[in-house]
Length: 471
Ligand code: PFF
Image (cartoon, rainbow, N blue to C red; front, side, top):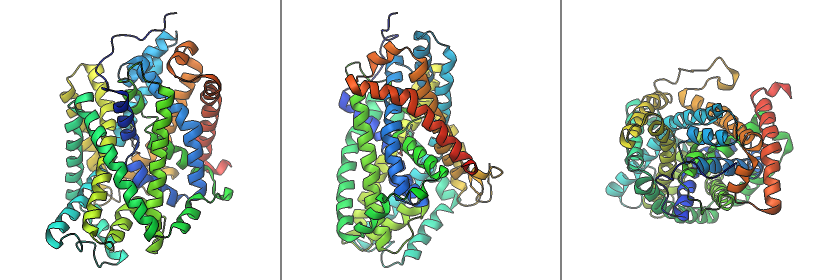
């Protein structure tokens, strides 16, 4: 059987570095800076963090390689790429439903992700205003108690019109890059913004090391207490690994489709996963010392970053300037991820309906704005609306939390589970082997992970996570 790639290659990344930076840009985002500390805090620290690292290495990494491999072989939007691999392997094209589920999940994540992106814009606005009114020190957060700083966040998220407008603003910034295409828009944002992001993150972490409670943080984040490793904690950790690596939503299949044949996917997957996980851990080491030093509770949830860091910045010389730099950096990271989230459904609309890129991106943006409005209002006017409240897993949750939980704890793990089964058991072995760039023992180990460990572990974690009472 000829296993050459189907069709002509289409528009792609201009270089291997551009792909790596774009994929890291997709992976590194609010998931690392906001969701990781929030989930670590909500799930008791060390046990969650260490299990999460294990999930990244043993489940996330093999699935990441599987997704990019499918995309590069297929050279098309995610469902079409799955179909091409399935057909070439003599299997049913219906396997494309795995990617269709992924495209839908990416759209759902986009819808709430840009709401959080909007919150970041608000904070950028506050720091800019401070610079003009009070100079580099002082400003909105200065001389305020922790509770007062928390109140600023509370007031923002309950201001319906404000959060709706901010959400739309973030979507508009995102479409500005997606509409320009891969090398013209998406790549540019990653190549310039990601290096700037790393420099800023390191600077702020070094500051935290000198100022905050580092010893307490290390023991909180890295002490393994097996009794805390319940089914829901394991599901939260595996879900965080997928959310953070942008897996199970066809996002990496989509980016993989723009990769040239000269790129070794095994090596690049390792680079992407290492960079992403390091940023999450650094974010933890950056945020928790300040949380502990301020006497705040680590379970602060999504607001952790918005409440603790501004409080810390108020005490630093030139706090407004550093605060501004920090939130601009968070905004960059969020943007390179929202671009990936929008690209996934946009590429599908282009492939499926043959619309032009700007039209496809506009359709996705309008739909995300509608669903995003419900998410934006769910922290204020619609806080009493609990869409899936009748299910224990979603009890008491508004739209934003429902979509976050539904994608992070159900559709992403399920998408990744099906992808590992597809690559491990359905796709032609020769096709897979010729694409993965792995040799020797590493190759054998990777096959063991995708064929056995990923499907079995993911099924078990999904069951004990969703139905904890069976343990
Ligand atoms: N990985 C991103 C983050 O950690 O913020 C979120 C994300 C981006 C998920 C792109 C999925 C995706 F396709």
